[in-house]
Image (cartoon, rainbow, N blue to C red; front, top):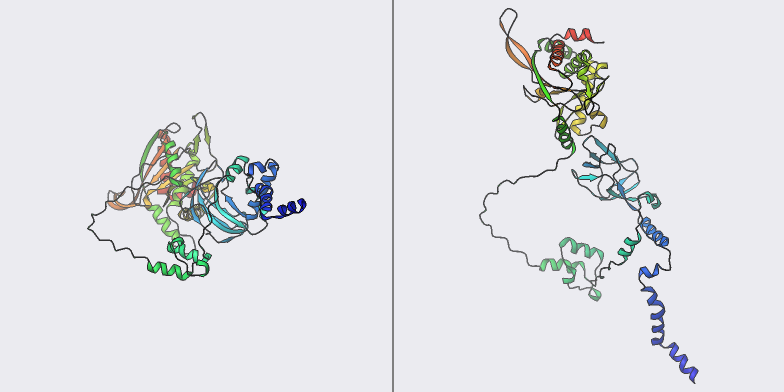
Length: 454
């Protein structure tokens, strides 16, 4: 009899529920920290890593692009969210204060997130985009960083949001989200109170439309100040001109008669099969020929001006005006180039500058600079030296002016002004005057330039 009573109690629902609660639910509700007492911490790390890899979406980090650059500006995106990319496909163009660089993909996959807009500042080492990998997710191991125990414990204490009690399909929820409707305020007519698409549409139609605002007379709005951050080439110009301000400048100016050069250029451009020449290749080649006689103008001092480095190559910089500011690419080894080769290189650099695609090599290594302000229309300009160079010339526009001829008669003459700035720590005024006179003679009598070419 006693055995029968015990057996019934053991098999009753309440006894079974009690045992289930004590044995099962208690274990399932143990905090994560107590479970870790029995499972090694390494196993938990493995669990988190496995979860991340199963997702197969990884951040694509902006790699170090060299020269200590920590921040770049995103100039153009070649992809958008949802695009499929392969390894070495172009992702975006970024611009530092030294050059424009194309960032390419290291993975095959699909773009899931873009972290920056155009003209935003991107940080080296931070994600540019998220990519969902096509191949085995274990490729992402080099991007994955396991969480620390403190982060895991903190994460485990975050409460989960309560589940919604609204019955609706994902399609209906999407329509409600697009219309800005709170589904908890919609009465469902479907089975079991499920909200149908028709319910959402009906709720939208039943919503009272806001009254049209009364138009009041408005006072004219005044323009507001606008603040822009200094970045890209403008940021580089701030740095360079701050250094240039420490250099003791002195100036020298002269005017040049270009009738002979105008006639020579007209004759050369008559050949339709050759590249049309501007005046700038002649100015550059004449400067290189004069630098051969005055190498001090093709030098640069060290930081404390105790040594002077005489540069073997004439890398002549040319100031180019772009939408991003003034930049100065340079033509390498001008002393070894013909006038036609200089013209071709000048065209290449200007086209790249216009598209914002100049590389670091094009923008570094300059030894001497010419700025042609005459292309814009100016006549006089006092240029600022581009460190670590020691001399720069500013060329004004060519004007047809009255001048006295050899017999005292007045005749129209092509005249151009040149303004030089030089570093007075290294160069004196007499040296610049002699250099300028030699350069001037090459342009006024182009035959002398041909005679001195090697």
